[in-house]
Image 1 (tube, rainbow, N blue to C red):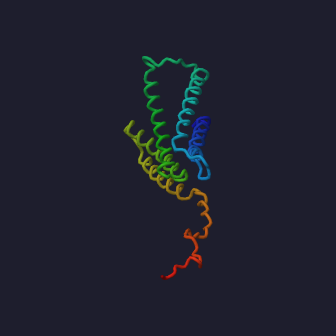
Image 2: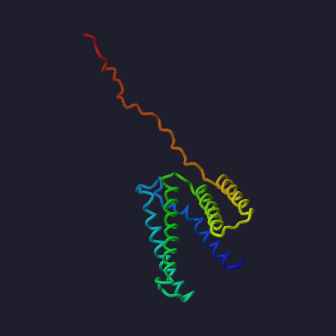
Length: 185
């Protein structure tokens, strides 16, 4: 295994591992006077994808690989499969945004499911593509499930929000005045 590939994979794990907690911070806090919907930050996730993917991809194509910008003929699969991969990434980000907001999920258990599940889906896709596999792959999938459960169960979840102090009950009815006592006729 090449050391630089491991370094790049760890960089991906760092970025994607911080995605859930960062997205949680993008929501309007309980103490914020202004409220907004959970998909307001999602639009800027898209802007970030565009800026980094187009800018970074163009720079890497030109400088690191001396590639061309032709997407016709023999190069068409790069466009087709690249668009599909980007769509899957964006749909995944959309589903993750929904899981961490409207569905009420917390990064401490949603993220292990996402990443453990991604490893398992990748293994299954490879198995189906190459029609070969080792029984230890299935043992690994089982261990991933155990890892997801243990990680989700023992990740610190933070303290529950403090309950507001009980306020004394205030009687809304006016106090009876001794001078207002009804008299019999």
